[in-house]
Amino acid sequence: MLTRGHPAPAPRPGWTGPIVWVMSETPPQSAENDSQAADFDAMTRDIAEVPAVEVIVTVAVNLMSAAAVKLGLTDEGDKYKDLDEARKLVHALAGLLDASTTEISSFHAAPLRDGLKSLQLAFREASLVRDEPGQGPGEKYTGPVYG
Image 1 (cartoon, rainbow, N blue to C red):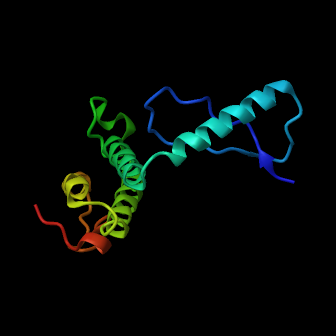
Image 2: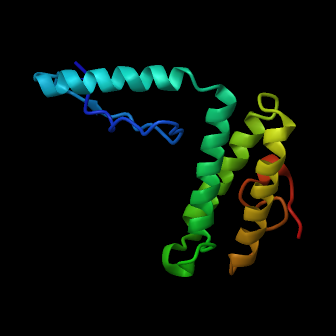
């Protein structure tokens, strides 16, 4: 039987970052696990109060941040650069934004689309072998991106 395992520590007040779910085949057996179950219930209530638009925007910002790191656009530069990983993240971001177009307002969508385009252009500049127009990461959803 699958039961919930050890949930992540309770987030600090106002925290809207990702929630990590852990599954375990071992049922809870101690008072410590009962305390963790109470924390899990509190996190469930907290996430239930977050509007869907905020969840979508938070996920998009997390994808953008991860893609920027993998593109080498941080202070560390090439230390974490990995274009294969960046391609996946940019593509996922484009898919999320395409799928949520009708769900989030242009107030939220416009800066996310601008950020996506910037990441697509940064990917094109960082690549040694250029993708054909329309074949770059996320361009399946956005169409060709030109500088």
